[in-house]
Amino acid sequence: MNKTQLLQGTLDLLVLRILELGPNHGWGISHRLQQMSNDGLKTSQGSLYPALHRLEMRGEVRSEMTASENNRRARVYTITRAGRKRLNQQTATWQQFALSMQRVLGDEG
Amino acid sequence: MIGRLVASLRGLIARRRIDGEILEELQDHLEREIEAYCLRGFPPEEARRLALRDLGGLTQTIESTRDVRSTSLDTIWRDLKYGARLLRRSPRFTLTALTVLVLGIGSTTAIFSVAYAVLVRPLPYVDAERLVFLSEHQNSGIAWPNFDDWRRRATLFDGLASSLADAVIVTSEQLPQRLDSRSVTSNFFSVLAVQAHQGRLFDAADARPDAALTVVVSYAYSLREYGSASAAIGQAVSLNRQTYTVIGVLPPGFRYMTAADGLPAARAAGRRELPHHAAAQQPDQPLRRRPVEARS
Image (cartoon, rainbow over all chains, first blue to last red; front, side, top):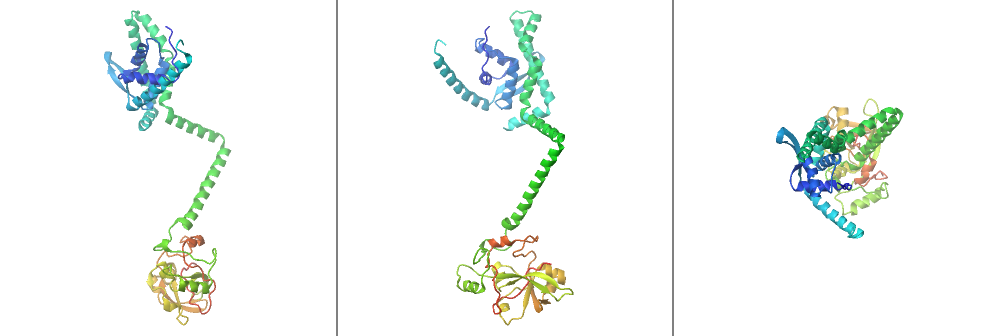
């Protein structure tokens, strides 16, 4: 279980990417992140929730308290148009960055 | 942008509610985490322990999440409060700063008021932008013979008029009074496009050397001395020991080279444009002494 620490500034991008697949709540997002990264990435609640609220303040996601199963209420996040736009930009930037890192470090890395 | 503002406002107003919502959100997270551990086969007690460990510091999470929500407006409010406290703590500095501000704003306002009256406020004449002010040299007057030549030869202007500021002593009242007045050429008011409020203004006949002495007074003067503008017409008034007849009253608010509020407005005259003071008033020239703006 050697989980990679998230690089600074990448969490927003990952969250946006996961929400692009569909609305989700906080736990669902962190769970999905582990799944999609094959347990390679994990985020702590201490950074996930501030990030979600920060994204909401920036208007890149919006949230709603919804009633879920077992009479519980969950806050469900949905990506907005601004969020999609930022996701596209950041993805391109990130891929460029990763490619350049790869080139410098070499395939054996 | 507006969405962000609304969110900050909401964050500011409903901080407690938001704290509650964050707590509820984290609670929900915890329960889902426990369920997930249970599903993987951990006994409930163990699942709960593991989930709590994963969750980390709850208070810290709530605080940092709330900080995100309350940044902008809350920070400004905190800064304001902090500033106010600092000012209260050093009253001498506060007093100095306030004095500087008060003096600065006050003098700026005062200077602007003058600049507005002198430079910006439109001149109170019809077609004021067509009026030009002529002089031989910067701010100088015009020698009468030169003005006379200009008047006869100039083709650029609809009319050229001249005036000369001079005070007169009025001796027809019980007490002698000194009034500001202006000797003007007979076309002076028609160049300014001013109509008489009562009576008539000058015409060419008034400027003939053998004409009876006539005077036009301001509206304020007519009210003060005769009670009404119409009562002023035809009155005899002694100016510098010569008897003049009041033939007309200027419209209320008429001013020339003076601002209505009494500011010296010599510069405003620079924009306007009349041939300025005929410098010398020669005995045989068609200039006559007529107070046009009477001020006490």
